[in-house]
Length: 337
Image (cartoon, rainbow, N blue to C red; front, top):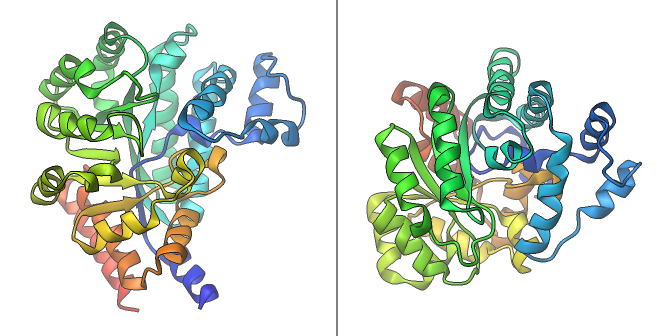
């Protein structure tokens, strides 16, 4: 049955809504970019790089994650990073992906916003043409930087608004609630951007942060967000509004010691639009197929429930209706086999 489950997941048409492009930086590419750009990263082999990809909390992960970005310097670097992810995604039958990126980190190193967004966007264009994987960019605000920095980043993005689908919020949640960025997200909404926010698993004041995201900012999706089960009123808002939760089982296990498989399965079976995604797969060791398999094995999901996870993802994706209908039809055909 496990072999059959693996084959079913492999063929399943997928939609990924929670993956950080900078979190797809595999050791091989990190080393190659470091050499090309003359960046001393302190490691010389793939094994040495992989040895640094160890952490047991969100804070310890971020302490490794941000310095690794120093190897990304030119538009071509960003192109190659995104393209490498999209090749992997295509191999796992991802049909559509909305991908996060963190421009403030790069801008703080003197890299122009234009170089970042054009490199990533060009990779998306080539992947759709050559690999059959469509996608879009979600710019994330780094929440442990000042709100003024967030507004500056948004202003830098607006001339390239046609290349950016939405605005997100990520990084260290401690002392950085959604309310800190209310003005930034209000402006983004006025500019026509879609809105989502990370409410990471088991963080300090997490249910209050979920409340702010839902009621004050009025986001369309919440990234992670499984702590919503701790507040019945907020859970009902999520259910009634059809707010999507972009869950990441394998990374949950790294940063909290618990994949939250039982919670994700409960939400799925209660009709909440939960989805399964890979988060930072180069660091956590699992792309979307591996995350689906890990959840299915832990929570004893049926093939029909795996299909429902992908149906949820296509339904909450920020897609034109005609494109969404094509993906859902493809998913339906697969489920009927």
